[in-house]
Image (cartoon, rainbow, N blue to C red; front, side):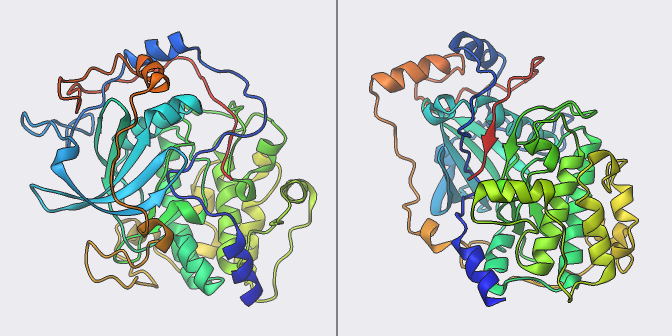
Length: 411
Protein backbone atom coordinates (compact mmCIF):
# COMPACT_ATOMS: atom_id res chain seq x y z
CA UNK A 1 0.00 0.00 0.00
CA UNK A 2 3.04 2.29 0.02
CA UNK A 3 2.40 3.45 -3.54
CA UNK A 4 -1.25 4.10 -2.78
CA UNK A 5 -0.33 6.20 0.25
CA UNK A 6 2.20 8.28 -1.69
CA UNK A 7 -0.29 8.71 -4.53
CA UNK A 8 -2.88 9.95 -2.08
CA UNK A 9 -0.42 12.42 -0.55
CA UNK A 10 0.24 13.81 -4.02
CA UNK A 11 -3.42 14.73 -4.47
CA UNK A 12 -4.09 18.42 -4.10
CA UNK A 13 -5.59 18.92 -0.63
CA UNK A 14 -8.07 21.65 0.18
CA UNK A 15 -9.34 22.78 3.58
CA UNK A 16 -12.97 22.46 4.54
CA UNK A 17 -13.46 26.12 3.70
CA UNK A 18 -12.29 25.82 0.09
CA UNK A 19 -14.61 26.61 -2.79
CA UNK A 20 -13.44 27.15 -6.37
CA UNK A 21 -15.41 27.89 -9.51
CA UNK A 22 -15.24 25.53 -12.44
CA UNK A 23 -13.73 26.67 -15.70
CA UNK A 24 -17.01 25.94 -17.41
CA UNK A 25 -19.36 28.78 -18.26
CA UNK A 26 -21.81 29.61 -15.49
CA UNK A 27 -25.41 29.05 -16.42
CA UNK A 28 -26.87 31.94 -14.45
CA UNK A 29 -25.48 34.72 -12.32
CA UNK A 30 -27.42 37.06 -10.05
CA UNK A 31 -27.03 40.72 -10.84
CA UNK A 32 -25.83 43.09 -8.16
CA UNK A 33 -29.38 44.31 -7.62
CA UNK A 34 -30.62 40.73 -7.21
CA UNK A 35 -27.95 40.05 -4.63
CA UNK A 36 -28.82 43.20 -2.71
CA UNK A 37 -32.51 42.30 -2.74
CA UNK A 38 -31.69 38.89 -1.30
CA UNK A 39 -29.44 40.47 1.30
CA UNK A 40 -32.38 42.51 2.54
CA UNK A 41 -33.99 39.26 3.68
CA UNK A 42 -30.96 38.28 5.74
CA UNK A 43 -29.44 39.10 9.09
CA UNK A 44 -26.58 37.18 10.64
CA UNK A 45 -26.79 37.32 14.38
CA UNK A 46 -24.94 36.23 17.31
CA UNK A 47 -27.11 33.42 18.42
CA UNK A 48 -26.62 30.31 20.49
CA UNK A 49 -28.39 27.02 19.84
CA UNK A 50 -30.32 26.09 22.97
CA UNK A 51 -33.45 24.31 21.87
CA UNK A 52 -35.60 27.04 20.32
CA UNK A 53 -37.96 26.07 17.52
CA UNK A 54 -35.68 27.62 14.91
CA UNK A 55 -32.57 25.94 16.30
CA UNK A 56 -31.24 29.22 17.68
CA UNK A 57 -32.04 31.60 20.51
CA UNK A 58 -30.38 34.85 21.48
CA UNK A 59 -28.42 34.43 24.70
CA UNK A 60 -30.10 37.05 26.82
CA UNK A 61 -29.43 40.46 25.35
CA UNK A 62 -25.79 39.82 24.59
CA UNK A 63 -24.83 39.67 20.94
CA UNK A 64 -21.83 37.48 20.21
CA UNK A 65 -19.04 39.15 18.27
CA UNK A 66 -15.37 38.58 17.53
CA UNK A 67 -14.36 40.09 20.87
CA UNK A 68 -16.10 37.22 22.66
CA UNK A 69 -13.48 34.76 21.40
CA UNK A 70 -9.78 34.19 21.93
CA UNK A 71 -8.16 33.34 18.59
CA UNK A 72 -5.85 30.37 19.14
CA UNK A 73 -4.58 28.54 16.06
CA UNK A 74 -5.37 28.32 12.35
CA UNK A 75 -6.70 24.84 11.60
CA UNK A 76 -7.84 25.27 7.98
CA UNK A 77 -7.52 27.58 4.99
CA UNK A 78 -9.40 28.06 1.74
CA UNK A 79 -9.83 30.51 -1.10
CA UNK A 80 -12.39 32.63 0.80
CA UNK A 81 -10.73 32.74 4.21
CA UNK A 82 -9.66 30.38 6.95
CA UNK A 83 -10.79 28.28 9.90
CA UNK A 84 -9.47 29.28 13.32
CA UNK A 85 -9.55 27.36 16.57
CA UNK A 86 -11.08 29.76 19.09
CA UNK A 87 -12.09 29.77 22.76
CA UNK A 88 -15.20 31.56 23.99
CA UNK A 89 -14.13 33.85 26.80
CA UNK A 90 -17.13 33.40 29.09
CA UNK A 91 -17.38 29.60 28.94
CA UNK A 92 -13.86 28.51 27.98
CA UNK A 93 -15.35 26.19 25.35
CA UNK A 94 -13.28 25.59 22.20
CA UNK A 95 -14.87 26.06 18.77
CA UNK A 96 -13.88 26.21 15.10
CA UNK A 97 -14.53 29.64 13.57
CA UNK A 98 -14.87 29.84 9.80
CA UNK A 99 -13.96 33.31 8.56
CA UNK A 100 -15.16 34.21 5.05
CA UNK A 101 -14.19 37.31 3.13
CA UNK A 102 -17.29 38.99 1.77
CA UNK A 103 -15.37 40.38 -1.16
CA UNK A 104 -14.32 36.87 -2.24
CA UNK A 105 -17.80 35.43 -1.65
CA UNK A 106 -19.28 38.03 -3.99
CA UNK A 107 -16.44 37.96 -6.50
CA UNK A 108 -16.62 34.19 -6.92
CA UNK A 109 -20.43 34.19 -6.94
CA UNK A 110 -20.64 31.94 -3.89
CA UNK A 111 -23.27 33.92 -1.99
CA UNK A 112 -25.96 31.28 -2.52
CA UNK A 113 -23.68 28.42 -1.48
CA UNK A 114 -22.48 30.28 1.61
CA UNK A 115 -25.98 31.10 2.78
CA UNK A 116 -27.21 27.58 1.98
CA UNK A 117 -24.58 26.19 4.33
CA UNK A 118 -25.71 28.51 7.09
CA UNK A 119 -29.41 27.77 6.60
CA UNK A 120 -28.89 24.02 6.50
CA UNK A 121 -26.63 23.77 9.54
CA UNK A 122 -28.87 26.08 11.53
CA UNK A 123 -31.63 23.48 11.34
CA UNK A 124 -29.64 20.23 11.60
CA UNK A 125 -29.01 18.48 14.90
CA UNK A 126 -27.51 15.03 14.37
CA UNK A 127 -24.78 13.07 16.16
CA UNK A 128 -22.70 12.61 12.99
CA UNK A 129 -23.00 16.13 11.57
CA UNK A 130 -21.09 19.21 12.72
CA UNK A 131 -23.37 21.77 14.39
CA UNK A 132 -23.38 25.51 13.79
CA UNK A 133 -23.39 27.38 17.11
CA UNK A 134 -22.98 31.07 16.25
CA UNK A 135 -23.02 33.32 13.20
CA UNK A 136 -22.15 37.01 12.99
CA UNK A 137 -20.46 39.52 10.72
CA UNK A 138 -18.30 42.61 10.37
CA UNK A 139 -18.28 44.94 7.39
CA UNK A 140 -15.70 42.84 5.60
CA UNK A 141 -16.18 39.29 6.85
CA UNK A 142 -18.72 36.63 7.73
CA UNK A 143 -18.16 34.38 10.72
CA UNK A 144 -19.61 30.94 11.38
CA UNK A 145 -18.70 29.18 14.63
CA UNK A 146 -18.95 25.39 14.82
CA UNK A 147 -18.22 22.72 17.38
CA UNK A 148 -14.51 21.89 17.21
CA UNK A 149 -13.56 18.27 16.65
CA UNK A 150 -9.85 17.59 16.87
CA UNK A 151 -9.64 13.91 16.02
CA UNK A 152 -8.41 14.84 12.54
CA UNK A 153 -9.76 14.43 9.01
CA UNK A 154 -10.36 10.98 7.60
CA UNK A 155 -8.02 12.12 4.81
CA UNK A 156 -5.23 12.44 7.39
CA UNK A 157 -5.53 8.81 8.47
CA UNK A 158 -5.92 7.44 4.94
CA UNK A 159 -2.80 9.35 3.94
CA UNK A 160 -0.85 7.82 6.83
CA UNK A 161 -2.12 4.26 6.64
CA UNK A 162 -3.07 3.82 3.00
CA UNK A 163 -6.34 2.06 3.76
CA UNK A 164 -8.54 0.84 6.61
CA UNK A 165 -9.69 -2.59 7.71
CA UNK A 166 -13.17 -3.58 6.58
CA UNK A 167 -14.35 -3.39 10.20
CA UNK A 168 -13.22 0.22 10.49
CA UNK A 169 -14.53 1.08 7.03
CA UNK A 170 -17.91 -0.46 7.86
CA UNK A 171 -18.21 1.58 11.06
CA UNK A 172 -17.44 4.87 9.32
CA UNK A 173 -19.71 4.04 6.38
CA UNK A 174 -22.57 3.26 8.79
CA UNK A 175 -22.26 6.59 10.60
CA UNK A 176 -22.01 8.47 7.29
CA UNK A 177 -25.04 6.64 5.88
CA UNK A 178 -27.06 7.57 8.97
CA UNK A 179 -26.02 11.21 8.56
CA UNK A 180 -26.99 11.20 4.88
CA UNK A 181 -30.29 9.53 5.71
CA UNK A 182 -31.05 12.40 8.10
CA UNK A 183 -30.37 15.19 5.62
CA UNK A 184 -32.13 13.33 2.78
CA UNK A 185 -35.21 13.12 5.01
CA UNK A 186 -35.11 16.92 5.05
CA UNK A 187 -34.83 16.98 1.23
CA UNK A 188 -31.20 18.10 1.29
CA UNK A 189 -28.44 16.54 -0.81
CA UNK A 190 -24.85 16.88 0.36
CA UNK A 191 -22.90 16.65 -2.93
CA UNK A 192 -19.36 16.80 -1.53
CA UNK A 193 -18.70 13.58 0.37
CA UNK A 194 -14.95 12.96 0.59
CA UNK A 195 -12.34 12.18 3.28
CA UNK A 196 -11.41 15.86 3.68
CA UNK A 197 -14.97 16.68 4.78
CA UNK A 198 -15.17 13.95 7.41
CA UNK A 199 -13.79 14.72 10.86
CA UNK A 200 -13.29 12.42 13.82
CA UNK A 201 -14.31 13.56 17.28
CA UNK A 202 -12.28 12.77 20.38
CA UNK A 203 -13.89 9.31 20.70
CA UNK A 204 -13.48 8.39 17.02
CA UNK A 205 -17.01 9.07 15.74
CA UNK A 206 -17.59 10.64 12.32
CA UNK A 207 -18.67 14.27 11.93
CA UNK A 208 -19.72 15.40 8.46
CA UNK A 209 -18.68 18.99 7.80
CA UNK A 210 -18.69 21.65 5.05
CA UNK A 211 -22.18 21.98 3.58
CA UNK A 212 -21.18 24.70 1.13
CA UNK A 213 -22.20 22.64 -1.92
CA UNK A 214 -25.37 21.21 -0.42
CA UNK A 215 -28.72 21.73 -2.07
CA UNK A 216 -32.08 22.24 -0.37
CA UNK A 217 -35.64 21.35 -1.42
CA UNK A 218 -34.65 18.28 -3.45
CA UNK A 219 -37.66 16.00 -3.73
CA UNK A 220 -36.93 14.32 -7.08
CA UNK A 221 -34.31 14.09 -9.82
CA UNK A 222 -34.48 17.74 -10.84
CA UNK A 223 -31.11 19.23 -9.88
CA UNK A 224 -29.02 20.47 -12.79
CA UNK A 225 -25.90 22.17 -11.40
CA UNK A 226 -22.49 20.61 -12.02
CA UNK A 227 -20.63 20.61 -8.72
CA UNK A 228 -18.65 18.40 -6.38
CA UNK A 229 -15.15 16.93 -6.17
CA UNK A 230 -13.94 15.11 -9.34
CA UNK A 231 -13.11 11.71 -7.81
CA UNK A 232 -16.56 11.40 -6.24
CA UNK A 233 -18.83 12.76 -8.99
CA UNK A 234 -21.69 10.50 -10.05
CA UNK A 235 -22.04 9.65 -13.76
CA UNK A 236 -25.31 11.56 -14.09
CA UNK A 237 -23.56 14.72 -12.88
CA UNK A 238 -20.77 14.28 -15.44
CA UNK A 239 -23.36 13.74 -18.16
CA UNK A 240 -25.12 16.97 -17.15
CA UNK A 241 -28.30 15.03 -16.54
CA UNK A 242 -30.83 16.01 -13.89
CA UNK A 243 -30.15 14.22 -10.61
CA UNK A 244 -31.26 13.83 -7.01
CA UNK A 245 -30.33 12.20 -3.71
CA UNK A 246 -28.77 9.14 -5.35
CA UNK A 247 -25.59 11.15 -6.12
CA UNK A 248 -24.72 10.96 -2.42
CA UNK A 249 -24.94 7.17 -2.44
CA UNK A 250 -22.58 7.03 -5.43
CA UNK A 251 -20.14 9.17 -3.44
CA UNK A 252 -20.50 6.89 -0.40
CA UNK A 253 -19.80 3.87 -2.60
CA UNK A 254 -16.68 5.62 -3.90
CA UNK A 255 -15.58 6.52 -0.38
CA UNK A 256 -16.19 3.02 1.01
CA UNK A 257 -14.16 1.52 -1.83
CA UNK A 258 -11.41 4.05 -1.12
CA UNK A 259 -11.35 3.27 2.61
CA UNK A 260 -11.00 -0.46 1.96
CA UNK A 261 -8.71 -0.32 -1.09
CA UNK A 262 -6.67 2.86 -0.63
CA UNK A 263 -7.84 4.91 -3.62
CA UNK A 264 -11.18 5.73 -5.28
CA UNK A 265 -12.23 3.06 -7.80
CA UNK A 266 -11.78 5.22 -10.91
CA UNK A 267 -8.97 7.49 -9.74
CA UNK A 268 -6.55 8.90 -12.28
CA UNK A 269 -4.17 11.86 -12.02
CA UNK A 270 -5.52 13.06 -15.35
CA UNK A 271 -8.98 14.47 -14.71
CA UNK A 272 -10.35 13.83 -18.19
CA UNK A 273 -9.25 10.19 -18.09
CA UNK A 274 -10.79 9.87 -14.64
CA UNK A 275 -14.11 11.21 -15.89
CA UNK A 276 -14.06 8.66 -18.72
CA UNK A 277 -13.35 5.88 -16.23
CA UNK A 278 -16.26 6.97 -14.04
CA UNK A 279 -18.52 6.79 -17.08
CA UNK A 280 -17.30 3.60 -18.73
CA UNK A 281 -14.56 1.67 -16.89
CA UNK A 282 -15.16 -1.74 -15.36
CA UNK A 283 -15.42 -1.76 -11.57
CA UNK A 284 -12.65 -4.04 -10.30
CA UNK A 285 -11.98 -5.27 -6.78
CA UNK A 286 -8.77 -6.39 -5.05
CA UNK A 287 -8.58 -9.97 -3.81
CA UNK A 288 -8.63 -8.94 -0.14
CA UNK A 289 -12.11 -7.36 -0.43
CA UNK A 290 -14.88 -9.51 1.05
CA UNK A 291 -17.95 -10.48 -1.05
CA UNK A 292 -20.33 -8.31 1.04
CA UNK A 293 -18.09 -5.27 0.61
CA UNK A 294 -17.89 -5.89 -3.12
CA UNK A 295 -21.65 -6.26 -3.32
CA UNK A 296 -22.52 -3.02 -1.52
CA UNK A 297 -19.91 -1.05 -3.48
CA UNK A 298 -21.23 -2.52 -6.75
CA UNK A 299 -24.75 -1.56 -5.71
CA UNK A 300 -23.89 2.04 -4.81
CA UNK A 301 -21.64 2.38 -7.87
CA UNK A 302 -24.36 1.39 -10.34
CA UNK A 303 -24.25 3.98 -13.12
CA UNK A 304 -27.99 4.10 -13.67
CA UNK A 305 -29.19 6.12 -10.65
CA UNK A 306 -32.67 4.57 -10.76
CA UNK A 307 -31.07 1.13 -10.28
CA UNK A 308 -28.51 2.32 -7.72
CA UNK A 309 -28.62 0.95 -4.19
CA UNK A 310 -30.19 3.70 -2.10
CA UNK A 311 -32.29 5.23 -4.86
CA UNK A 312 -35.45 4.11 -3.07
CA UNK A 313 -34.16 5.27 0.30
CA UNK A 314 -31.43 4.76 2.87
CA UNK A 315 -33.05 1.57 4.14
CA UNK A 316 -31.71 -0.20 1.04
CA UNK A 317 -28.20 0.66 2.22
CA UNK A 318 -28.81 -0.07 5.89
CA UNK A 319 -30.35 -3.49 5.25
CA UNK A 320 -27.46 -4.71 3.09
CA UNK A 321 -25.56 -7.73 4.39
CA UNK A 322 -22.39 -5.64 4.64
CA UNK A 323 -23.85 -3.90 7.71
CA UNK A 324 -25.19 -7.10 9.32
CA UNK A 325 -22.41 -7.18 11.96
CA UNK A 326 -23.60 -3.78 13.28
CA UNK A 327 -26.68 -2.81 15.25
CA UNK A 328 -27.44 0.42 13.40
CA UNK A 329 -29.83 1.63 16.09
CA UNK A 330 -26.97 1.32 18.59
CA UNK A 331 -24.64 3.07 16.11
CA UNK A 332 -27.07 5.98 15.85
CA UNK A 333 -27.28 6.17 19.64
CA UNK A 334 -23.44 6.22 19.73
CA UNK A 335 -23.43 3.07 21.86
CA UNK A 336 -21.04 1.20 19.57
CA UNK A 337 -17.41 1.80 20.45
CA UNK A 338 -15.44 3.16 17.47
CA UNK A 339 -12.72 0.79 16.21
CA UNK A 340 -10.16 3.60 16.40
CA UNK A 341 -9.74 6.37 18.96
CA UNK A 342 -7.58 9.38 18.02
CA UNK A 343 -4.66 10.37 20.19
CA UNK A 344 -5.78 13.61 21.85
CA UNK A 345 -4.59 15.26 25.06
CA UNK A 346 -7.48 17.68 25.44
CA UNK A 347 -9.97 20.02 23.75
CA UNK A 348 -7.23 22.37 22.56
CA UNK A 349 -4.98 19.67 21.08
CA UNK A 350 -4.10 20.31 17.41
CA UNK A 351 -1.68 17.45 16.76
CA UNK A 352 -4.02 16.01 14.11
CA UNK A 353 -4.23 19.26 12.14
CA UNK A 354 -2.16 19.76 8.98
CA UNK A 355 1.06 21.49 10.03
CA UNK A 356 0.86 23.90 7.08
CA UNK A 357 -2.35 25.35 8.55
CA UNK A 358 -0.89 25.69 12.03
CA UNK A 359 1.94 27.81 10.60
CA UNK A 360 -0.57 30.49 9.52
CA UNK A 361 -1.09 33.22 12.13
CA UNK A 362 -4.46 32.94 13.90
CA UNK A 363 -5.46 36.52 13.23
CA UNK A 364 -8.37 38.26 11.54
CA UNK A 365 -6.93 41.13 9.58
CA UNK A 366 -9.06 44.03 8.33
CA UNK A 367 -9.49 44.34 4.58
CA UNK A 368 -8.06 47.62 3.22
CA UNK A 369 -10.78 50.19 2.63
CA UNK A 370 -10.02 50.75 -1.00
CA UNK A 371 -12.36 51.39 -3.91
CA UNK A 372 -12.85 47.69 -4.61
CA UNK A 373 -13.96 47.09 -1.04
CA UNK A 374 -16.31 50.05 -1.18
CA UNK A 375 -18.02 48.44 -4.15
CA UNK A 376 -18.34 45.14 -2.28
CA UNK A 377 -19.80 46.97 0.71
CA UNK A 378 -22.67 48.06 -1.53
CA UNK A 379 -23.48 44.38 -2.05
CA UNK A 380 -23.76 43.91 1.72
CA UNK A 381 -25.20 47.30 2.67
CA UNK A 382 -28.45 45.77 3.88
CA UNK A 383 -26.67 43.71 6.48
CA UNK A 384 -27.18 46.37 9.14
CA UNK A 385 -24.26 47.31 11.39
CA UNK A 386 -23.64 49.09 14.63
CA UNK A 387 -21.46 52.16 14.84
CA UNK A 388 -18.58 50.03 16.02
CA UNK A 389 -18.84 47.93 12.89
CA UNK A 390 -19.01 44.65 14.77
CA UNK A 391 -22.44 43.07 14.43
CA UNK A 392 -25.90 43.82 13.18
CA UNK A 393 -27.84 42.03 15.89
CA UNK A 394 -30.86 40.86 13.89
CA UNK A 395 -31.89 37.26 13.27
CA UNK A 396 -31.64 35.84 9.78
CA UNK A 397 -34.84 34.73 8.18
CA UNK A 398 -34.05 33.27 4.81
CA UNK A 399 -36.49 32.21 2.12
CA UNK A 400 -35.30 31.98 -1.48
CA UNK A 401 -37.89 31.00 -4.08
CA UNK A 402 -35.68 30.89 -7.14
CA UNK A 403 -32.75 28.60 -7.76
CA UNK A 404 -29.57 30.48 -8.62
CA UNK A 405 -26.78 27.93 -8.81
CA UNK A 406 -23.39 27.81 -10.41
CA UNK A 407 -21.07 25.16 -11.71
CA UNK A 408 -18.64 24.51 -8.87
CA UNK A 409 -15.88 21.94 -8.77
CA UNK A 410 -13.57 21.34 -5.85
CA UNK A 411 -10.02 21.05 -7.06
